[in-house]
Amino acid sequence: MWPGTWRKLLAALNPVSGAALRAVKRLHCPAGKRDTIFALSSGHGKCGVAVVRTSGPASGAALRSLTGQQELPRPRAVALRRIHDPSSAETLDRGLVIWFPGPHSFTGEDCSELHVHGGPAVVGGVLQALGRLPGLRPADPGEFTKRAFQNGKLGLTEVEGLGDLIHAETEAQRRQALRQMEGELGQLYQRWSEELTKALAHVEAFIDFSEDDNLEEGVLAQVDAAVRTLEEEVSGHLQDGRRGERLRGGVHVVIAGPTNAGKSSLLNLLCQRPAAIVSPIAGTTRDVVESALNIGGYPVVLSDTAGLRETQDVVEREGVSRARERLQQADVVLAVLAAVDVDPEPRCFADALRAVLPPGPPAQRAPCILVLNKADLLEEGRGGALLGACGEGALPPTCLLSCKTGEGVDSLLSLLGTQLEQMCGDPLAGSPSLTQARHRLHLTSCLCSLGRYHGYKSLDLVLAAEELRLARRHLGKITGRVSAEEILDIVFRDFCVGK
Image 1 (cartoon, rainbow, N blue to C red):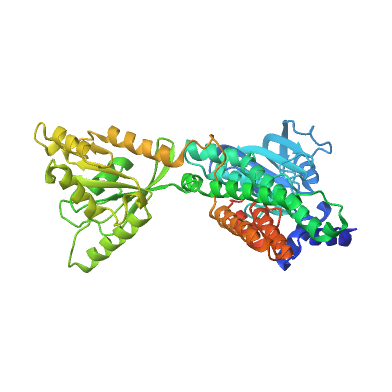
Image 2: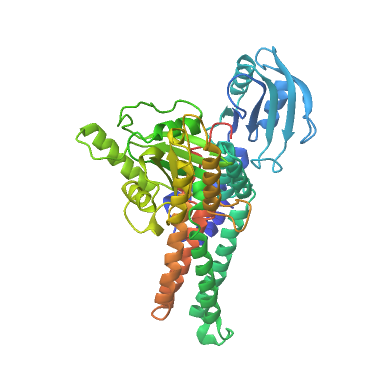
């Protein structure tokens, strides 16, 4: 039975690699031959309640052994039980147990959960008791989720969404991850894959049967139209300004400006802690100092950099070089100037910004917010004159700020929040955004194959069909429909044990 099934699967994956063969074998391994795994699924450390989870064919026997009762609880219903160590009959705790018979479980296998008190001694005793039972072993990192994928309970993009949800630190990250975990992104890629499958079938049918007059007219024209529509959709999906990736990994905001403008003071003000050393001595900051923040629900990686100036100091020169490099990678730049050092003329502001921002056309630069610091040292009326001068020229959004008194920080946060919202958007609105670099890589390769299809179409339909097959394979690598062991390892290695 199994060899025949494998042959059919291998034919569908043709050409197949050794890694894909191993993936197919693993996906279709009879459940009875699998180990039963267990792990602490809640966080480590002292807590009110800890959750210990098992998955595999021996889950039912393990639950019977630990509760001392031959009858399993009603499926998916909570039951209060005494939990014993089977080797000594000692009571370990009194807690809640839940029985999830497969396939109606997270992994698709027989599963159980033990909700016990979260003290280290209780949790350790339960884990040791499970480890002494035959057929059970501790789970590898991400193995529960991996089994859910292998048993068809989750697609690969849903798995990634689950991982992002576990690590989400802001509201926007949570919304995006939950949307992906619920399958919207996977459904989009699956629809494209189905359209490619249909187009490929029509091309191959034309190659095999065009001389038999059994095909309706215009088959290739329909394929061309479908491929062009798909090209437009994939291209539009890729041209999203990296919204999903920025939201997942954090928007890189770089604080830059001349020495002694108050850049490190601004970092400390926004972080609400002394993250960087502050000194009246020019050139104190030599290296890039980073801090992760939540601003308006959006994740931000805030970087303080060395003051930009010409210097003979070898160490400071390296710091300036790193600051310039970080500016090239920035998503948003906070250009900090000392308000007392700038004349209220648009030309002066433009010259100061030119010395800070990377060279090149403004359209190719990262968005910038001009921060005029040390407002507490300004004479009365000068702050209004500075803001008025900024309004006259083609200058970025500007705010007056005093890091010493905190005056103006709300205005800065409002400007920054608006910029973050424009860059990341609403993760619940419109089409789902791609969130991983590997998605972008495979979609770009898919788009290239679709483009080559048009070039080969008039020369050799067999080569054109192969490009459609390659395009479909790249989509399959995103969703996990075309398995490769190295892809699975990358996705699952970042999961923690018990997830």
